[in-house]
Structures are given as C-alpha cells and as structure tokens.
Length: 202
Image (cartoon, rainbow, N blue to C red; front, side, top):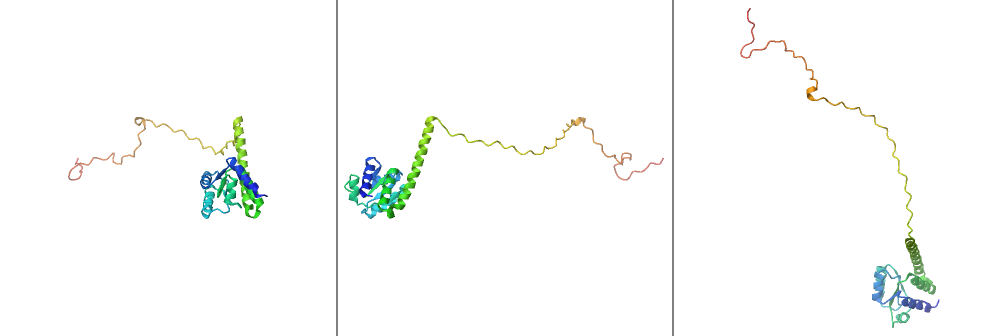
C-alpha cells in the first residue's frame, strides 16, 4: 500500500469538512465527541504528543502516530506543516486506519480491529435510526406488548355467616335484674342509741 493513498485520503476528508487540523480545532472536536481518530506527525513535539493523549481521553477516541512528518502531513491538508489532525467521520477514519494497518500490520493492526468494530456499531445505529425515521413518516408504531391475562386469586373458604344481633330495648323497658333475697327482711329494726333492744314485759 502506497503511503500517498493515506495522505490523499486525509486531503479528501479535509475537502469534505471531516478533518480538524491544529491543536485547538482538534481539542474542540474531541471535547464535542466528534473526533473518531487523532493522527499525530512523527516529528511532533513531546508537549503536542501529551496533549494529543489528553484529547483522545477527553473524546473517548483512538490516537495514532503517523509515519509522516509535519511537513508531509501539512502538504496533504493544505498547510506548510501540521502536527496533529482529527478525522470526524467514522467511515473515513476506518479507511485511514485500515490503510495504515496494510502499510504496517504490526504497528496498526490492533487499532484497525478496534476501529472496524466501532465503524460496524456506528453503521448499525445509523440503520436503526433510518428505519425508525421511516416508520415515523409512515405512521407506524411498535406493536403493543401482549398483556398477560389477569391472575385469578385463589379461592379462600367462605367464613360462616354472622348471627344477626338483637337490638337492645330501651332502658325503661328492660327487665329489672332479680336480686338476692334480703336475709334481714323479717327482722325487727334495731333502736338507735345506747343499750340493746329489750323485750317489753307483757
């Protein structure tokens, strides 16, 4: 695989508006989660390399060192020099990384496999979104889920019927309770005062 094809692919991404060039645009694309892969020139400064790693962590994307110098990368993207670029289209990013893997399988093979998986998932999400929008335009909706039949509670043994309570009669009509017989009902009354009761002589 000729390295010229990779640089021409980056130029194509730039013309399509899918390439961020320079540290600030790359940082903005990474923070917006638009960057798919960050590419670093082979002779970039150590500080630029550290910032590229931070951008990749912030944007949750891959970053790869290129086998091209800043001058070569700059010419491909219409600059005098460029140390870092970010591809924002998943299809172009996958194509660039795949061509890098063909150029150097040992160095870029693992990254190409990861990018291939990301591209596949992105294509699946895009297809699902397109199908959903088509259904919305046609007025189709998801079929409602089948409702489970209501559960019949287990029969419990019926409680015995309660006996009807009798209404209590008013107080004036209630029978008076029968009291005990007074044991002293037939005895003579006791005189109050001193002494005891004496029988009168007849």
